[in-house]
Length: 189
Image 1 (tube, helix red, strand yellow):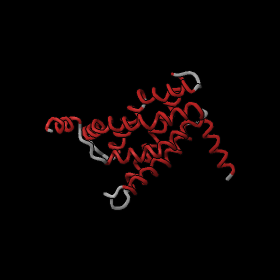
Image 2 (tube, rainbow, N blue to C red):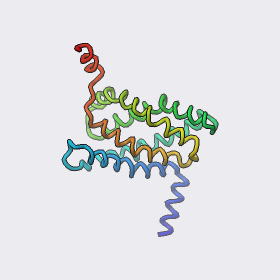
Image 3 (tube, rainbow, N blue to C red):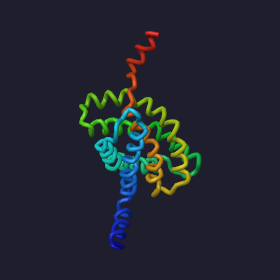
Image 4 (cartoon, rainbow, N blue to C red):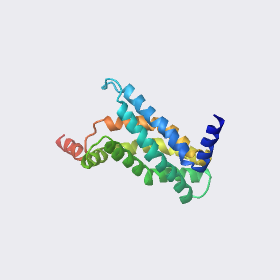
């Protein structure tokens, strides 16, 4: 048992991305299950959906977040609160659209939807999702970049991502009017 634990510790030290992957591999499917529990339109759990969240979180989102945190550290040198705030807002401009695109395209492709269906959902939900994220993530990431050592940043983001993924799961199942439908509804008023 101790040799297994030592092997695990060695792997995590040698490949630091695995810390985030393991964390996302637990938190993303758990977030999806929480969202399903609160969704009164569902009857029972969709465990295939939960597995898709696990796969996307573990093998796509965690490595992407890990890379972004590395890039942000190189783009903005410094560890002051001012630097942390700048990194957090830079993330909303540069990374958030990429991460949210990765979610909508990835989860829909894993569901077997066509490329056109994936893009349609992405177009309809990206801006509302980004707006909500712009209220949530800057505070989390300011704390992350200012107070948390770099080796633990992906883990902290994944814990905050627990709440965020509940929201993403909700948004994925929510019907959002497309921009053209919204404009038509406004013009018809």
